[in-house]
Picture 1 (cartoon, rainbow, N blue to C red):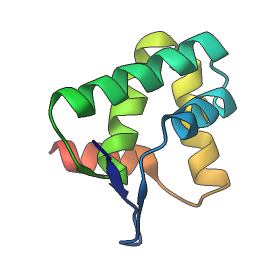
Picture 2: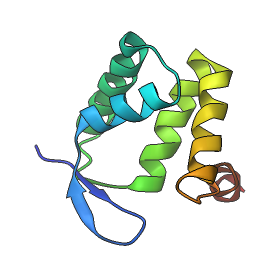
Picture 3: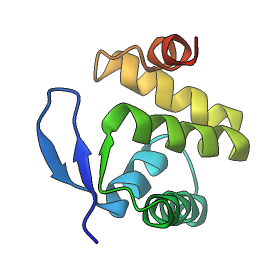
Picture 4: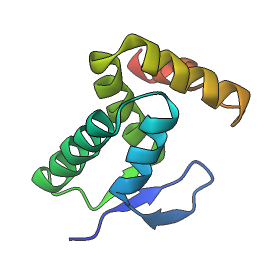
Amino acid sequence: MAITVIKRDGSKEEFIPEKIVVSCLKAGATSEVARKIAKIIEGRLLEQNISEIPARDLTRMILELLRKENEEWYKNWIVFDRAIKRRRTEEELTQRER
C-alpha cells in the first residue's frame, strides 16, 4: 500500500522512509537509530492502514521517538527547523496538544 504525505503547503508526495533517516541523521542520530525510527514509523502507518498523513503528524511521530532516544538530537531537530526552515516546530507541537 502506498502512503502519501500531505505537506504543509498542501502538496502531496509519496512517503519515503529514507527521508526520515536523512532527517534524523541531520539531527545527530546514529544511522542505526535513524533507520530504527523510520522502520517503526513505517510499521505504525501500515499497521493502522493509513494511506495519507499530514507532514505535521509525521514530524510529531518522528520527534517523539527521537526524543526517547536522545534529548539532544530532538533539540537539534527543533533548532534546525527554526534556523533553516523557518518553522517553529516545537510551538506547532504544543499548540496541537492543547
